[in-house]
Image (spheres, helix red, strand yellow):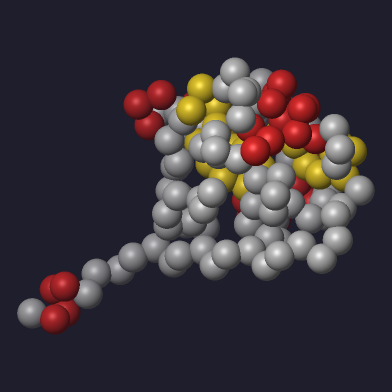
Length: 135
């Protein structure tokens, strides 16, 4: 009986440590060119990239979004994005650029996303994340 109740669950992502210093640049996704291929998820050392499901969970219309509060500006996602759709932006300008380039978001409660015209999407669970990102 106990074995039946113990089912495999996706690992829960630990909370990111507090930032000691603000990076000079942050990564921002231009979702107009994003294919949702998830290459960036594999290289991100701080797990700040989330997958947003397509309409009605259409896996062919997924997008990714970067949590600017967690991004450390390492540039790995920019380097490995096969579609050149992620750019490094000056930290002070990143929130405005993110609002402009974001079509669908799972982080609408973040200060830097408030008031954005982006559609609120649903978090798409992946092998990297088992549950919705913390706000």
